Image 1: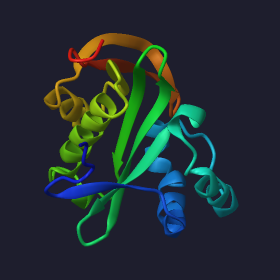
Image 2: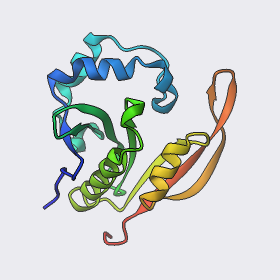
Image 3: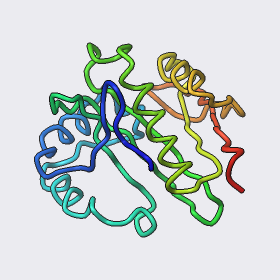
Image 4: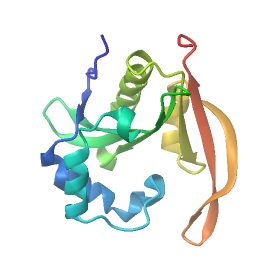
Length: 177
């Protein structure tokens, strides 16, 4: 049985009550670089997204979960994207919203829970992520969870008037064919 509950946090589905939390994250220009966002999102659009968030990952090819503490405080989100069941792979992204909640073990536990879910429940063979070369927190997080740096995409993202390199990381599940 795969559990989405850890010692510090648990992962849960999106709820209509998450509207303000998601709106705040999606409209925080400081993290647009991480999410490849270019424009703000209205509450109307996010509400529509939440209304369809229950759809099956096999249909929409993505899954977004809220990272929540046991006192029911939403502290971040973790995503499965580009879900490709035919090739048994998917991308992963994670964000802990407030700086004070970073380096507390929440991200590591959330990432481990999601990797376990992807490998044991979705039967994926590999996971990957894309991380800007200057995002040392994410680089360390994924390295510590066993992801291997497999490539460098030079001048990949144009941010604030200059190009930035981006690393490609991958985690292979050797227990799945």
